[in-house]
Image (cartoon, rainbow, N blue to C red; front, side):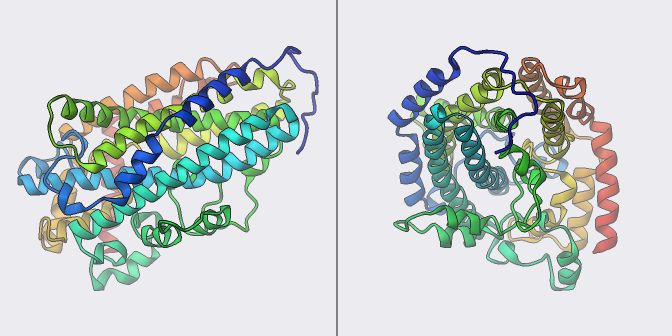
Length: 435
């Protein structure tokens, strides 16, 4: 661990955040939400859940597009289920990445002060929970994708003639391919080790923290990892970034939580993925509280940050804006998705048994759905603005932020339907040339 260049502590009293974290940790230990997720995971069968919406209709791929308006009920159900798949593939990736960062930051804080041993135990428990979440999401995503789109959608290109071209494209285009690998490493009854997840990190992940880590090249020196593991102030700053991810998750998952409560109140059938989202929302509330106290308050009880540390902390917040929050989607309320990155998937979807289109017809519909204004853009702009408001309220409480971060200026600039369509037209033209 590297200590700050300025060892003058602004506050000499006992760290008042520790009792709050201890209470939150105790409440987490007393809960049984993770166990409920495990049970739902073990018993999941797609056919038993295939005739129900897993979330509100607006949480569907292509919602608000001309294609969605003329889709049949079975097609709309498939689009709703695939939206769940997309969202929780990214959540699983994010939680996989988090396992690494939770470990290195806990070690850094523990090295700074042995009184922080409880933090190591708290974060170890959260890591255990993340592992159970990852397994549930990956298992359900794999089974759902296989049932809805068929085996070829898991790993194969759109058609034989595009194999070479697709292999040259960014690996982030393949959202489902690592699920089987993860499931193989996490079979029920198999004791999990940190090495299992180090091994999984060798596969490409595309979660919230992907842009911080050098992606799948683990041998490359990781700039943010090296700083978060070396400076206590920056270890605490990581949790400000983690809180941004928590808010993004909460912004979407709260809607499914409310949908679950509505179904329960009306004694209606609740699909297993809906219930998993509900319990995950409750589980992650503890993690969100951890992120808030560590990211907002903990640095006040650490040695005063140097100019370098504040600079790195601001770069991290800025990176999070650029990587995850700088655009809106016309096809999904999922804040992780970029329209330009999912065109290969859309080709697979439209040529699958769900829509059974020709290649030419599929391309025409992709252009209609991505390159022209429709209701979906306006629905997703509202989602974007709600999250922007929440993130600004949090950023206002961090006195070391640059104005571009306090105002979430990069994210705000991405809240433009006109800009989104312009970017989609450019991406679609490049995509068409590549086919």
